[in-house]
Picture 1 (tube, helix red, strand yellow):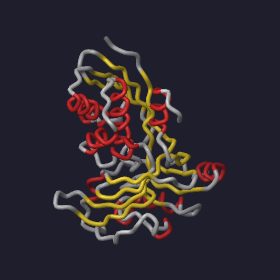
Picture 2 (cartoon, rainbow, N blue to C red):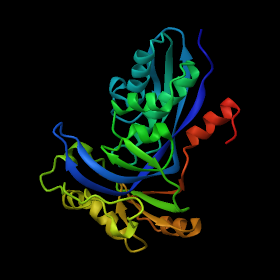
Picture 3 (cartoon, helix red, strand yellow):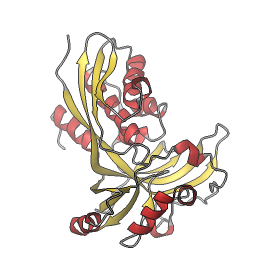
Length: 288
């Protein structure tokens, strides 16, 4: 018997900085970064089914086949790990740009893991779900844990942070960038010195991927230079999106309103806690 559909948020993230501190023997890069969650979200409608099939019934990223969709892969991975025979239909309403460094695919995967863990009544804790998510992508665990965080390792060692309230202007220059390409670039700096949470200042940090992306993608370079006239413009992740932080919503919206027509702009509030976790708490009758 099928259940009713429920709708779940999948928030975007920013990397406030990204230092590449080394490269492991398996090819993964060692990083230090701060993940900032945003109130800019994709939505996933999930309908539990009794037939054992995991299907994407609508939506999703343009050009991404169902079997390659991280949301579908997450559902199948949870099904395999739990031994559950139930299925699900997923309908994904995409707002977060693909290939923009905002973590949309990873967030979709985390949302499916958390929602189906609840809907299928599996009962895995966050550590177990994060471990399943890490097999899908290095950014999935931060969305599973649902808090802005300091991250190390390949991004899986997380320490939650309470970040200063900020509003962000995020620009999408209309292109997608493959993370693999940037991390495989010969010119990428891979020896940034380690810093500590308490000993670091955002002004003293950077995104080590930015010089690579600036040189290879003139559209991103132009967006960084334009936004840099109004604030400290930075690349998030490996791009292509760029952002700047502001203390007030009004200022952010004024800057976004001047965005050239060739780009898309978004104004988003920084969050310390994922709206997905807030929804789960309400569902369980817990205090938010």
